[in-house]
Image (cartoon, rainbow, N blue to C red; front, top):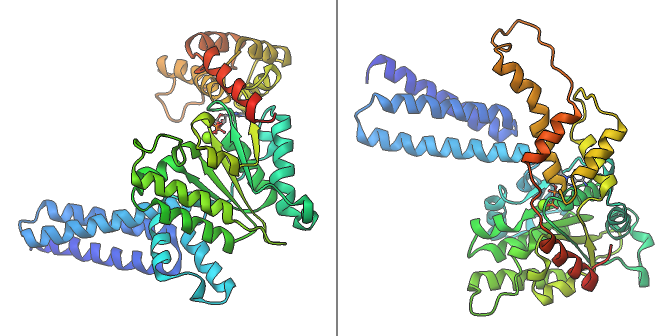
Length: 399
Ligand SMILES: Nc1ncnc2c1ncn2[C@@H]1O[C@H](COP(=O)(O)OP(=O)(O)O)[C@@H](O)[C@H]1O
Ligand SMILES: [Mg+2]
């Protein structure tokens, strides 16, 4: 080893040791930084090293450091990891007895998949959907905030299902409800669960509900629930899929909301007709989240251009609403993103952004910009798809 190599290696070891120390103290940002530097130094180190045993050892370490950094990052993004939530639960519950070693292991594994975030979405961030908001207030927010009011015959619905076309605010509504009632919010995307944990997913589901119970009042939000509970025929369903579905059904069924400790399940789906019948019946309340109406569309244009200089008045926004029939909230947000980049793109094309110190003036957005973009960015839904939602809503849902 040359002296440069050996210094590089020593540096990597030092960084790694510091990373572990920060990690242990819960100073995750510093830990991520140190893990990454340790990994980078080792990568440099093995470039110039011929010792196969050493290279193998380093590669393993690099992988470990990067994995750990990635996991910590996803924890930070999700505000709080399920593991730390669990540690606190155990303390609050007065000992280790509540959670077995096996479950703890599962929880450690799933911490990247299920997040217990504190969403920060306000009702006012969501345009339109007045009646959906009202239903969620009555079915989720109030029972969690004022459990005493919802006893006896007035007990809350244990399960609420949001259904409707993609991109129309189901996930947003769930987050706003959770923000308002300050419940612990467990958000699990089913597609993610299933693809990553095939074979183990039912353990995951049971762990999710167990933690939910411990952390009550809690709101368990299962997004894209159709992928966990389809009514596909016995034949085409794999054993793993069936086990997850059964587990989920029995967890929802067995869910007990005790006084002061409410626990509710909120599901969301773009494909309600694919849902297993037994699962459907567990969701006593089914709330339709339709495409935005004219007024809501105008409002969504406003929400998604906030803070950008605009040469548009209220009437122009109404005109945008008129021109965007059948656009979902997400479609409109895509249009807005496109439009607000236009002046920047023009400046860039004219070479005005070459000099970092030069002040540049960004022009206002005009109605014309929107018109052009609306011609390019088309809505995802067609009338036939839409009719299917309307029919289903007539049959099962409420507005
Ligand atoms: N009613 C709405 N008001 C404001 N923004 C909306 C609305 N509906 C959808 N959006 C935008 O579209 C995106 C997707 O919405 P989301 O709630 O994830 O849809 P869904 O869960 O129904 O598929 C949101 O992040 C938001 O930017
Ligand atoms: Mg969604």
